[in-house]
Length: 594
Image (cartoon, rainbow, N blue to C red; front, side):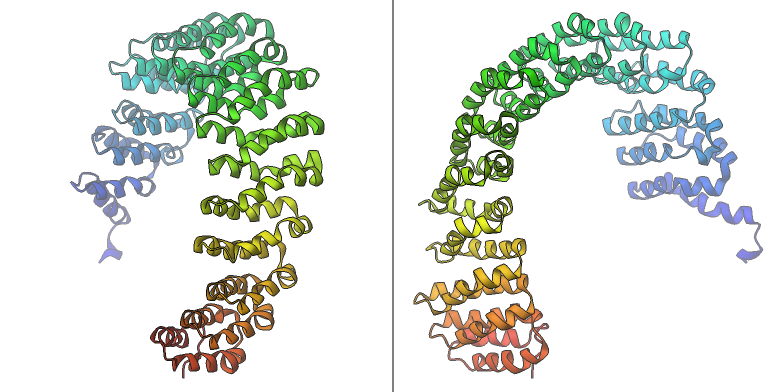
């Protein structure tokens, strides 16, 4: 019997099974086994985990990528399972092997786990075990190990002796000058992180030359990563050194022949602006930013356009307005009518943010005409971005000015002859309602929303009913009772049967938003009244509406009013009406079947 077996043997049985699974031909079984590694380790105990499990794993690292990925992730959490920080170095051999495999995601996960466990090494263990691993990786035959090494310098450098530090800087320099572009790229990507932990004197003497070489690399994929390092290095150096050591490279990058490098400069522009300080921004970056906004590549212009608001906000207050009006606004005016919709959309997402910076007078005179152009843009994303940010302008110029300038353009779009344009404006209406508030919305836009309910295009009528529901959710059922429902109910008397059907479609959605009381009091009588309509399509939609609003009604209403109505429709001359009445009667919400 199992209970009479020695406890050791009993506990080793599932471990043997799991280790067998690690050797199984089925990938999924091996993957499941790797995910249970912590269970194996707990059962084995720390001693046997160190002496048996870890060497076994180190010897068997030839597997499918997904199994290796799971293993690399698991080993990062193994510190306590091997006996705590004093034994954590025994995890290095399998992770070192994983950091050299061909698949990038596996290597990245192994490096992530190595970075995690490096913090658990004592300074002595770092020098004895971790730093030799970094050196082996950085001088490995395959580029895979050398790329992995780049991510490990920053985590071990601060806690080792000055002699070892000099050695690490030397190895990192070699990686920055490696023959393989992939290695130089990895080094460029980690240069900024390394710069943050290196002493200032060595930053200037050792790392700046590395940065200069990488920033002038023949591969644009390396040069663009040097731009990221530029942000870190500039933020660490005194102002004079930034001008002398960093700015020549930054000027060069902003005019690089590769658009990818210029794109990276545009993307990191506000970070660079903060790193180099106000004076250099004024003398150098304003002109560079103008050039990026006028770049021949749309991707670069879009990236720069995204930064317009932040760049302007970060300018020194004493020169802010002058620089915006003289240098930035002329470029912005050109971008408003850019040929590329991504550029226009990027600008539209931030341009409203210039209003609080420039104040009322400049907004009215210079920005409002641009907003009007963007509101009429053929790209829906541009229009949405403008409508989404109206509150920025509202705070600066006030609702009156806004209504006189932008709302006529919105109304014009809402009545556009192209139904897709009308549809786009309907979709923005709840957003606009939130920006303008109930009172102003009722005065200026409510009638427009009701007009859409009788539009000659079905898609507009359908969107208008959904719009009503969203407005009720925003403004509440009291607003619906006073403003919307009376107009919807009045449509039940319309001569056009399509409008009477729209009345039912609106009630379907409003009932859900308004709740049982309002539905029973104000909308149910209208639905029941339309059951006698002379058009079959209206009658079967009554049955569908009763089925839809059933969940909001009480049993006595269902039994006393809804069921008799559906029974009559069940005897209707039209087949479709009978079918939908039968469907409604057997519906689980109504629960009124005979």
